[in-house]
Amino acid sequence: MKSSASYQFSFAIFFLLLLVLFILNISLGSVDIPLKSVFESLWSQNAEKETWNYIILNYRLPKALTAILVGCGLAISGLLMQTLFRNPLAGPYVLGISSGASLGVATLILGSSILGGSLSVLGQSQLLISIAASLGSFLVLSAVMIVSKQVKNTMSILIIGLMFSSITSAIISILAYFSSAENLQQYMFWGFGSLGNLTWNELAIFLTVFILASAMILPVIKPLNSLLLGENYAKSIGINIQRTKNLILIATSLFTGVITAFAGPIAFIGLAAPHITKLILNTSNHKLLLPASALLGANIMLISDTIAQMPNTQYTLPINAITTIFGAPIVIWLLVRKKKMVL
Image (tube, rainbow, N blue to C red; front, side):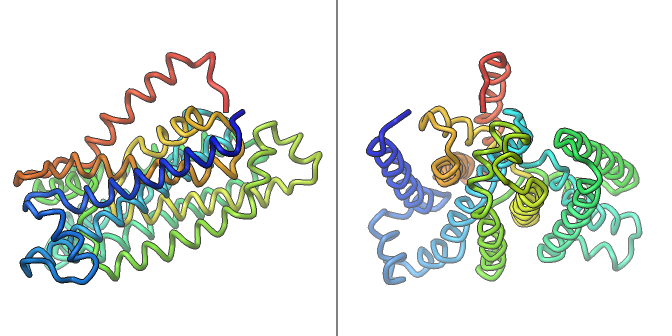
């Protein structure tokens, strides 16, 4: 167990790293913008060139803020799922919420392709794609919540979530089989994930849902610590297990649903960030783990996005490819150390 000063030092490093990575992310891109002009644009919207102002304020700044929200949300969701299911390999997408979002997008893009005509234009709208993903997430969430009230065993909820994922994947495969090559390619590109498509209005919606989900977590911090010792222990000290489960499931679903809707399915961050945080802090106290995981998740997303945009080139790599390259070795390492894994 570390001392209080040690935890404060760790958080200070996380915050400092976040600030540095945030500025670095905004500074780098296909257009080379001097660091001085970046600060001038952020501070007074008075960069040396007007085009630099536009690039920073309308593209790079929203993208960097999106990366922070995505990283925070996935890391928190991953920690919640690992604690609820007491499974180190659980992630934010185990409930099938992301698959529901993918089904919504596939129905819009691939389904409109099948129906053809003027309906095929619907699949081109970023706003409609976000709405379709949100509706798909909500439908799966509703199904999971209904089933969870009938099931007492927490692990059964995990299996049910995986089954929902399998069902949605099967439906998407059928839609893809009958879809045109153009729409299939559009859906595939959506699946790569992207942080740079949000307007300020969409970012405001994203932030509102993020704050709502975060507020739901506050009442369950103490129950989360109790759940590490098992549901029976949590019940013995007066924890309302069903209420705690509902809040965790809804909060996780809001996080993953809005992230998938606006940024696509981002892999591995929710699985890797909580484990790295536990290794650094060496604690199981969620009062420390939740904010620390959020900060680390944001840092990882900023690093991944900075690499993905390939500075000083015209190319942008899929963000999912970068997060997978980073996260997959963590999962392999966890499996190798399986006998030693503790929550």
